[in-house]
Length: 73
Image (cartoon, rainbow, N blue to C red; front, side, top):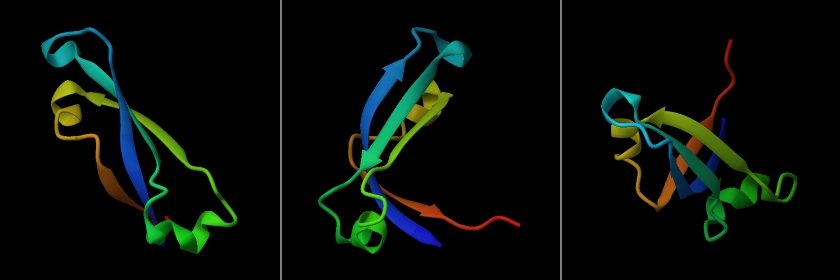
């Protein structure tokens, strides 16, 4: 498992309303965290963008989050 600390840096609204409202969330590596030292030398950059429904996007703030990547069978 690889653990990375990322920060929500951007929320891009599609302009829809209700169930038609979608938001693209962008996460970048949080350079202020020692968690990233484990993999940061080999992979010094990380960017993740995901599009979710507006109600889900409302749960995310512009703050750090822990991202865990595990091998899938």
